[in-house]
Length: 324
Image (cartoon, rainbow, N blue to C red; front, side, top):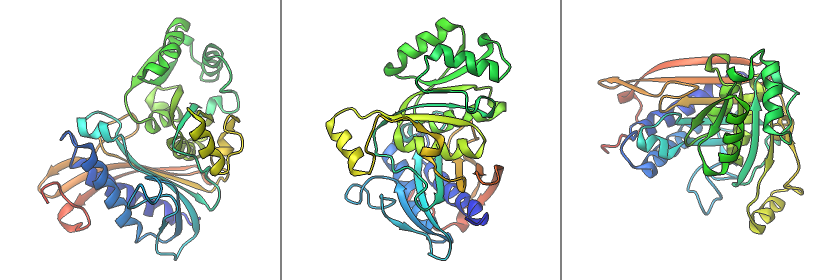
């Protein structure tokens, strides 16, 4: 993939973030999500690529745009798979909480796992612990391994976990082990990526969340030199059948980082909607001026760019405001 594609994809996540941020704290998650999705889909038309959505807003009969199988781009560039989450954290944004983001992962055709929309068990770490973790290890062993790899005492190690009843046993065991807990609400993409960025102080991510989000996360973790393992967690026979229909013969098999993203030619782009672990949120600076904070990474070169941009909203007719 051409390196220029990375910056084009940032423009797409910026548009989604700007559109959805106008609904921040207004208690309307549906409108926030619709705004992000519409803006993202509109911007994709100008991107130089021959893209197809492999992880999106659902099947064609469930989503009017960014549905699985939809063709994106102007067909003038490389053939790529696209995984999107126009607004990860719809409830986050509607309530004004942290870690709402607009995200895209792209890789050469056939490289992204076609993950069904179901739960996935995940563990992620930064580059120091790459190759050392196993999702099948007890959490206590994983903590010891990551602490040694990061040259930290166990009591100084931070484990980030989504605050859910299903994680209470893990939370209790981490506390009993003596490590530090950092809980978060909705949206686990930014939380998992935080393990790969030393400035966050986060060492280990573990928990059960969405499978599509897991694939998107893997593109970022690979770009940052970290490591990740996962396993699909279907809840019933219908979900097991869904796995089979999507070409996953053994839903319980261990998925390594290279199973989730099969190529090093992958790109991850993300723009903050609300304040978070990874990025600042959209700031409306007065008049028609707004500021976005984004990150874009390319696994092939492991280049990471932070992009802070000012936008004149009156010059962006594709962005609908909530007054319209």
